[in-house]
Length: 268
Image 1 (cartoon, one colour):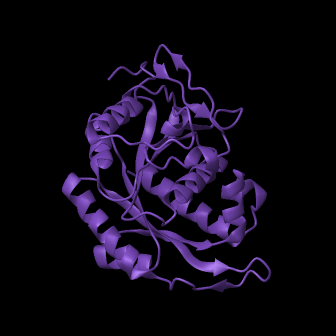
Image 2 (image 1 turned 90 degrees about the horizontal axis):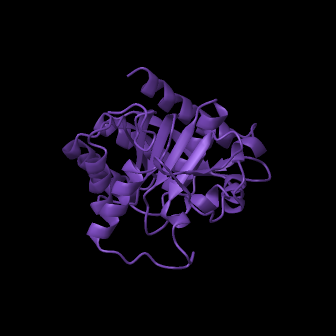
């Protein structure tokens, strides 16, 4: 592999897939907050958004719809900061109309994912997070097929506490085992509700389903993230939650998860 080819993943140290068994569990939120937490830890991070039908990360990072440029190595990712410590590539940047639906058959999706994997000039990154669609579809197989010649460190699985969600994540675990993807850990999102007035946490959707699933399947439990109105507002407004609320218990939980993930990657 040509180490000078920045259009490939040659200079990306770690590649991590972010998966969920179903939609609505906050997978893209977890991807975004993990990336920001890793950046605050001094790492250079990239996000590859292959959720082709629901590309929400550009909004979450408040980067708008900039024009994607090309260089000799391929597409130049969009940087969210002047230091170029967080890079992003998404189909959201390629659509002329943000309200346009992506009505594509499998082969066209697969071709675009192939381009995203091989033709983006990521340059030097410590971690590339790949935000995938829910389930186990063509997009997931296309990502793995195109990453075969590169090292994929593993996957982070996102669930909510309810049994209906953890049941779907069980199938995601089966998918990982069948495709040879290492499970780096499980994150339980929406684990309790943090009151914006007294900061007390109430378990609206129950609690502990993700941790119990990790025990039953022999997976690492990375931690839980509560429902926090401050986090929701930050995501809606495209603000850096870690920068805005560094002393919150929610940020502490996200930071601990990111550090646990980083330690796992660095000890491989």
